[in-house]
Image 1 (cartoon, one colour):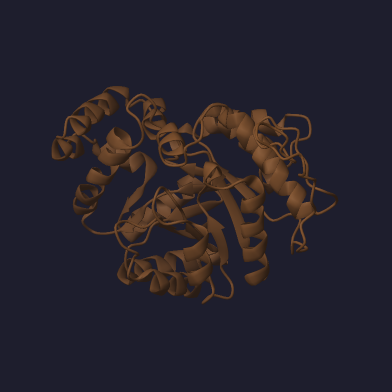
Image 2 (cartoon, one colour; image 1 turned 45 degrees about the vertical axis):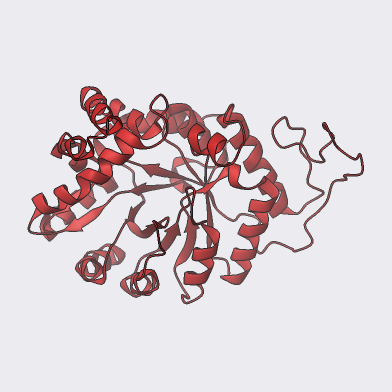
Length: 349
């Protein structure tokens, strides 16, 4: 089991201790560090800034939003970061949701699977640099010859030679069709709110993708990187109390009420009535009550919270379920110190 440090995206201000955490993660034996973006900070800039002080850990995005950049722009950022880091970049991509895509980026959300397939294909063309980059569309036609086009556009080949044609592309995916597509065209799956008890269901989705003609990977060389809060504590109740407002936000308030992919994940786990109640309370402004409505079991399903012995046992469960990397959110150096012996033991296995 490998470990990734999930730095996420910024809140109202940049995190004050991020560089310390990144340096400590490299020292502790983390395999990678990841940044994210929503509608505030971007993913690439902090990753490059903090990553410049490291020499070993891989540098990943979890995730870069498709609608934030054209495929070629994302490919440019990824190949630049890969050169600057000496081949340590991981490009994690995700479609986000309609509220962000249409409300923040001003683009239609429709056809997320088709857009993802086309987006990844263009990026791989750039990284391979075997010829001029073209796409028949319909989502990202290259060259563009649609309404308002000058007619002067022509296919281009990247000036800069990418360091790695096989720079890893991982996809953030939550639903069955998206997970199957991930297994077909990507090098890894960024799984948010993963639960080991549904591993058989996830494996069915993944196997569908692996079985498709031309699938890029097989289970043997495919990464499953699951975001899982890991908190080593003798007081699990306090940790649960801290996490419940966060979960109430993601389940009840993130995205549009009609389309909340995070809420759907928990419905598939069997928490439909609880999700409805959390959503009702959160959307009516009763955020504290929404947090109280989050069951302890819901958090334990997708996170690892307890003393060191409990955490070690749970890591075995997650690894047996097929997870190859845990993306862990660490808030402070004290928690990082608690993780160090566990990570060291896993690295020796």
